[in-house]
Length: 311
Image (cartoon, rainbow, N blue to C red; front, side, top):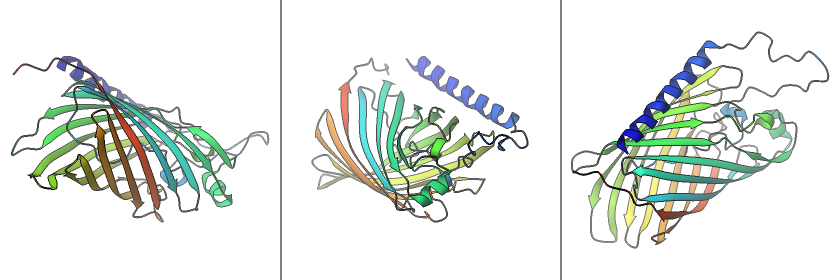
């Protein structure tokens, strides 16, 4: 099983490198965005975080734990409404499934559907042709591989790889209509264990490299960062406070920063409820960091026994 995990991770990195080489090698021809006939609709602006919907990069979410749950399949169903600077509400549903190979590796699949409505300003900013609609977002696959387990003196360290598909179209400015990838590392460490009302404090951090295409073969590269503190209370209740973002080089709204508060409550071994509020700290200069986004959902855990590695 470990060999299979290493093979999958290596395949991901090779695919990511292939994407990077292809994007750097191909340049859009001059005048490619100009229309030659009045029967062809005017092109939309280049897909960029500043003129896309709030869920174009929906997978750039809260900081994950480096610990991999090896004996459970996790199914998350989220309802995610958001308000942007144009006073437009967007309602989205996100479904993700995490399938572990063991306590050392897992793969996650995610998909989003959003219902949106634009006012006059939104239509102009997005270059949209319709005022409202329902859009399917990008299909996303995430691979995690735990390289170091947590000890009394060392944090857990997990490598993370993400591939974003191109099935979410750029029409009406909702998605990039192009592939993307992320490579990063997650760190996690307990710093307090107690027996009172507060049972544990856990620190999380993430760093990474994120790249995507703007659909005319101009690649934007960004470094991703984030950290969070989790407080685990008695009765299996958790409160997390975190900060995350990414910074690209094109300066087109590609440097959002977000502060979030998230709560989780385990009701049964198979069901956990969660909710969060995200606040965009620099929404005026980076419209993809929406002033406010809410999230609420449930997690369903299904048993998946596996043979643990012999020590």
